[in-house]
Length: 383
Ligand code: GAF
Image (tube, rainbow, N blue to C red; front, side):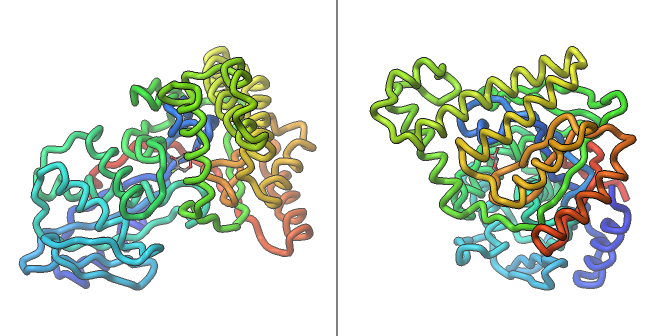
């Protein structure tokens, strides 16, 4: 965990509110494979990382609540007795949305003060939004002894995103951020929300992220549009979700779909298979197969699901030219953010140097490179 970040939130909190906060850490996530499958009741393979949100909380003695976004040098004040959405794109919706969703469960949320900061690069596809939502629901649950379970909390976070932020996201990000296990990735069945942990200890290989520094906007209708395509296709098939469809089923309604929508649904069915095959490959320690599945995932996201961008495609093409990289693909919702690369540890430094130069030459901007440590999920910081 980032000790500097914790110290910074603690000291700023004390400066603003004159008290010692309850401190929560809520991580961002990576995803090895299984993209855009979560809202299709499918399989995903995420892990919580050691980058995230640190949030301080205290009960308020007044009729109002104050929340300070330290990184933005901005704050909101409100009363929990009357929350309503702020204009679209306002960061405050992540907070107010969670309060509103807790209240819908019949629990009372008294007024409180909060200050938060994070070290997840925004727009990186590592889900700073789920980390923030989880930090709020977890913090309020601790502060006011609301008695919510972690499973209840992730659905509160997800609904906040749907109803206040306007993104009809699946459950992967909130789950991974809440339930992460140090040094493990989680093969999550998004229908049952039961996960199988896999210890990540690739012999001589590691996971590396490369951030295009292109900022996506998930709330762009593109994400919600794709979800609608999947839901409409399921309806046509008479099934609950695309997880229940085979390629043959999809073929049988091909004449009812545009070619684009057919390809999108086909991608979901195939990506779901890849996520399951990836868990098999990992169980067998077959990193070459895992890498091929990861490359296959990118190809589908690029050509069938159409959520990639030139910068992401370039990073994956460059990875393919390097024999020490077994697999690479875009990660998260898409349209920017990071690629995830399965790379031989001995090749990391040379590739970093190469890709930084190549990216700069091609796009005249910098990419950022991170190695990841897998972390535990949302919890209280004992600082
Ligand atoms: C975003 C969403 F929030 C997730 O639910 C998931 O759909 C992901 O995009 C794509 O796999 O991170």
